[in-house]
Each structure stands twice: as structure tokens, then as C-alpha cells.
Amino acid sequence: MPYVTQDYYLNTFHGEPVINADFLSLLMRAEEIVEEMCMYRLTLSAFHEMEERIQERIRKAVCAQIEYLDANGGSEIDNGIDLQSAGLGKFNYAKASGVSGSTQQSIYAPRAQRILASTGLLYRGGDCY
Image (cartoon, rainbow, N blue to C red; front, top):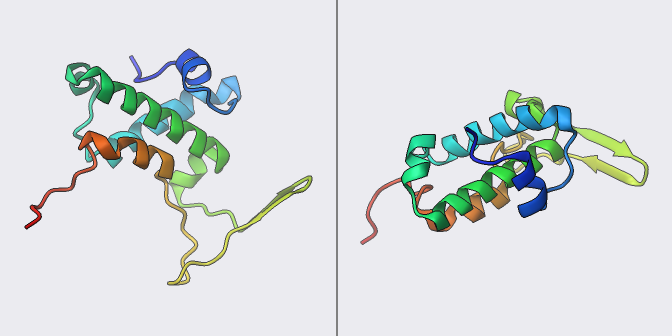
């Protein structure tokens, strides 16, 4: 059983519409990425043992990751293919080079990271003195 359903994505999260045929593959990729983002502390079995408020944040993070993947070329973003320029009607997008000259886009949705920030699942260890 996945972390979210298409019904949850559309009617509770109110995510941007995704083509029905693409939803399952985006969901599976988003779940993999969120688990990776959480350094694999997140699994379906662990999810069911978590507090409801943490479960809800995980659901929202998966949905945010689905939106991000869909808006940025689907699974292509995870394959290292980087868009340089695109246009559709009035919308035009050109990716600028970073400081190091790299144009590699993060596979992690910034919104998903913000949603998960208060869960402790992003904590990488080390003490603060």
C-alpha cells in the first residue's frame, strides 16, 4: 500500500492535476525519493508506527514531490537529464548555470523538504554544542 492515494493527492492535498496514466509512476518515484531524503528511516512498516501528525507530513511531502516531479519532467529529473530551455505559449524557461557552472537540478522538492523539516526524519546526526 502506498503512502498516499490519487484521491488523497487530488482531494485532500489539492495537488496540481497529473495525467492519470502518469500518476502511479510519479507516486512510486516520489515515495522512493522521500524515503531517500529521510535516509531510509522511512519505510511503510515504520510509517504505520509513527504518530498521525508525522504520517500526515509524510503524505504531504510525497504529494509535494509528485507535483515537483510532474512540473520538472517526471522521472527525467532523476536520470540526470537537465532542461536548458523550454517554451509553451507565453511561458518560457531557461535554466541558468550555478556558481560552479553546474546546471544540475535537485531531485528533492524544496516544499517536501520544508514539510518534513519538523519530523526529525531529515536529521543527519551530530550534536550541537
